[in-house]
Length: 140
Length: 207
Image 1 (spheres, each protein chain N blue to C red):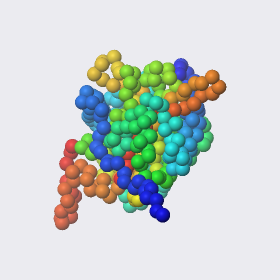
Image 2 (image 1 turned 30 degrees about the horizontal axis):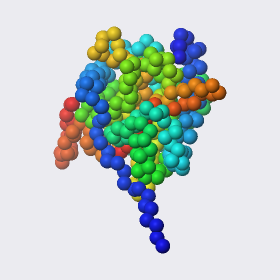
Image 3 (image 1 turned 60 degrees about the horizontal axis):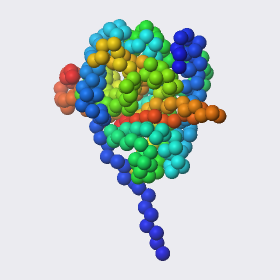
Image 4 (image 1 turned 180 degrees about the vertical axis):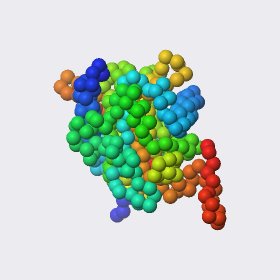
């Protein structure tokens, strides 16, 4: 991702915003309604830090999300940035940050903050964004 | 006939900071100490050294209108970048501060602050040879202006690359979220002693 000019940078900002908007719709809909397939959104090597608990890899993530009570997420704030190429070894990556409320079954509604690093995986036909890292914290 | 397929209702325990390793912990805590000592100094120009030439930075505040008696967030509103609400690409672009000079000029315009470093909870979100992504949550208070002494909570994500000086971090991405602190957070902030019956202002302890 070359950032030689502000014109280029604007293209990356637009791309990041579109990907982030689409991602949050899919991510929170999947975690709420189709939890079994949630880990398909993660890279095999992805790491989740959930309120200080570290979970790495598909198997551990599957196990974690199976044990996590069913959820109702509501997102009120979304922001995103293209991550600088020097940090990503030119692998197109965006930072996505959300905040909102979540009601886990059997628990009271809580405020939370979450951030994701999404990387673009190019396939012959299209580009698929995958979660490289996910960091979640309650905020109250 | 009964089937006992119970859905889970127990959440994993919430833990404190996640650093991954003692080395990362030392590096990130050192960075944060240095960073916030300049950030809170009254002049944030010194942060130029902490940012990459092509760094970017954005700020968001909650969309909902909160209890006005706890201090409003109007000083942050014009810079708030919430892609969920703002659909105009030009505005989205303008609210993302880009290049070191613009980022630091922007930070320098934000209200003067004092952060409670003892409140910080830090998570190392991702780490590779070329990237360190970490989140910081905590509280601060404003030390001047019309919201003087208002306690705010913040969550901030930094992405850094190794700098020429191996011991230092160079920020390429900075995402700041600010909201009003909750009653509990205000109570715990700055290890504030219980209010005294006298009418004199309650002293606060510096971190």
